[in-house]
Amino acid sequence: MVKNITIFTTNTCAYCVMVKKWLGAKGYRYEEVNLDVNPERQKEAFEMSGQMAVPVTVVTKQDDSKEVVVGYNLSKLAPALA
Amino acid sequence: MTQQEVHDVVMIGAGPAALTAAIYTTREDIDTVLFEKGVIGGLAAVTDWVDNYPGFPKGISGLDLAQGLNEQAERFGAVIRLGEVFGIAETNGLKKLSTSDGDIFAKSVLIATGSDYKKIGVPGEQEFYGKGVHYCATCDGAFYRDKRLVVVGGGNSAVQEAIFLTRFATHIDLLVRGDKMRASEILQKELKEHADKITVHMNTTTDEIVGNEEGKVVAVKGTDKTNNSEVEVAADGVFVFVGLSPNTDFLQGTDIRLDEIGMIVTDANLETSMPGVFAAGDVRSGATMQIASATGEGATAALMIRKYLENKDKHVVTPPVPAVADVST
Image (cartoon, rainbow over all chains, first blue to last red):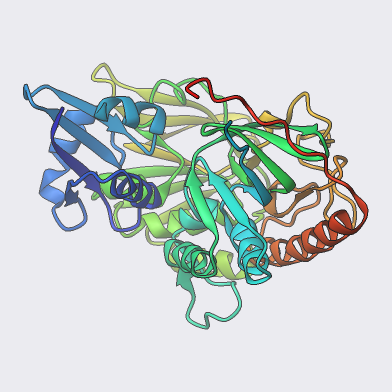
């Protein structure tokens, strides 16, 4: 079970729009961290994902374990939310 | 018994060509479904700024243009599914599409899957993918505030995105393999206006992306072809825009004819070698790779699809699609 979802995005990232659209269509609520607005959180996104890329979706489960998906990748995003 | 899903037209892709076609078909009350496995709006959506699309005298961001096309198509009833099409086959006078939502049938199909940026295929490119090597400036540029970058390529995308990246990077080296820029004159002029931040290296190949022991990109090695000397440029990241490759892998082994570089061959009506299957936009052999051309082709394809459907309804008796037995009943 999903406890919460955080997405790291930027203003100009079309793939970020797709992740939000897909999550919205599936009825998931999420917190968005816009790195253009909060550049001080870039390091956090990098440490979570190991990549200098967005979108980064962090799925926190009920047991506080986390799954991190980089990019708009439904083959990884859907299982992470299962 | 379960009824098979049959649509008047299924469009594969939801970039400018397909979204425009969908605006036209839905306004004709043609039942239209689009499948998009990537970004709605395609490469246009990940382009920083579009200055040459008619009707926007001040230009428009690629993302805003894509969202506008998306909303316009949905306004008239287009249904966009976030999923993938794996193959097309003829069956009982219909097109059978294998999709991530299962098998779907269509009276006609528009393939508008566009193209993606090519890779350069040099050492370090794969190793540092996402960790210093990128193909989307609007996505990942923000990670390079106050850093040095290399942009590879000499076409419109490379120049446009290098200019976009100046808002983050302290300095950009643009490596251009040829002796001439392929970018438009106006973009080249704009490039010169950023000479304080962008250094252009003509006749320079990109040979290796070099990292350090911490796994970070530190430099790009290349060759100056004028004297065969090695060039090494310090860089924290590399953005690659070296041309496009058509998204047609899923058509391998079908009856749809591709040209020597994998683009879809059509006739003057934009119909492929499989009757009732049309192609438009950047995936079509002979495409000019312009958003305006793609939307124009989308409109043309929609009118050809309408004509095809009218003739099909008049002259062809479509056998009923065999229904699949629902084992639960």
